[in-house]
Length: 243
Image (cartoon, rainbow, N blue to C red; front, side):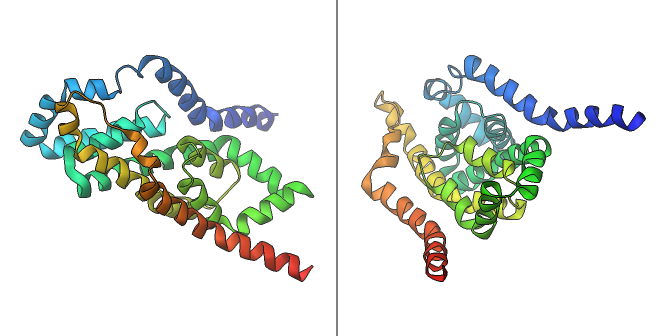
């Protein structure tokens, strides 16, 4: 009798982290979009640069914490944060801090989702037959390739690439590896934009994020996507030949 009472409570608690993320994300979407913007960065850039020069490690910690929160709670402003990393810290350190913060935020979503919905869904896939079994087997046979594709294809929203792997039961070590390596190309582009942000503001303009879609930028990223998809295609062709 006691067991039946405790189990639903524990089940509900497992969903609590993901529920908190969803609630904060919904609130943030309506309340923070006007604050986490390039206009806010432009209006406060002198104060930020002065604070950086006076307390580098302090602003580094604050920047990583804010970027982590933006990713972990799927708040608006991830692009602004990435560009800010380049503006404050330059290309090398900026990319390092951007990748670190974004990866930690992605890990937080992964664990929150896996603890709740991911645990039950993965169990259903493990016990399932037919289509569910084929999906599970295909995913785990090409896990790293699929995860790299989620990271590298620009059309996939970042929060989807964080949430989906947890819901289908991928290994965390593979998720972590592909997250850290997979977001580097995009992080380099946004950080690079941020490096020249001061001159853009001086001209009274806003940063042009459409640079990501320029052929010389998107081409190599799509090339990496093709390389990530290649093992999947080869296995699929071999499988048909064996049949």
